[in-house]
Image 1 (cartoon, rainbow, N blue to C red):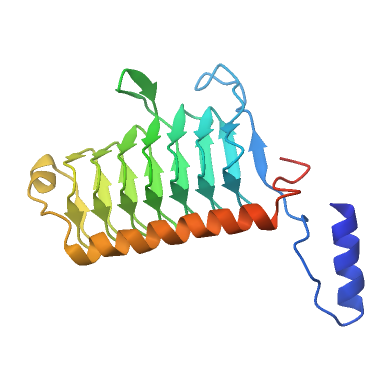
Image 2 (image 1 turned 90 degrees about the vertical axis):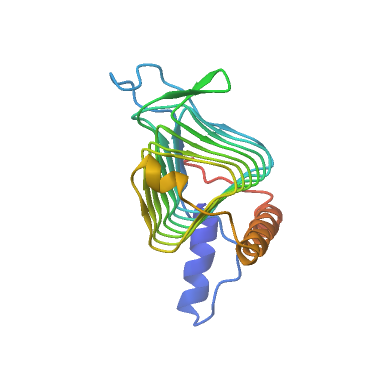
Length: 226
């Protein structure tokens, strides 16, 4: 870490741009503090094929399954509630926040947040537990999901708010919508083809980025402080 920083400073003083990647950033990957909220300290379980980007925070009873991407400045916190599970091939984009709180039982196990496989959580989205998000779901940028169950194949568009509802599989939430009652959730239509196609683009992009960054930082995928 120090060597990379020194090299960068030398190049900058010589008027040249540093050639990276230098592992000079900090990822905070830690067990949770022992409190009445989470009395048992648990260190995150991160699959060796997952990638955690710079300035991201992973705390407590968090599982990142194989080929998960956690991009830069994202936060997955199980310090005020857990566990949090992220399924294989899913991604959390820049600035995404998953915050454990209350618990629910899903498929016979207890979770604060459960995210299925091949799901995309976009830039700046917030997911607060207790919440289940199924397989192949898109949570749009700047959306907020609270205490809800989102079925497989749903597309939650940009800037939406979903709270305390169950959304059936393959449902579409339009841009900027609020879904605050079960009646509103039950009235949602199916995902249009253009957004099914958009999901494929988002999913493919996230997996290419995960693979690319994993190769780029193959010798130092975590900072010394992580």
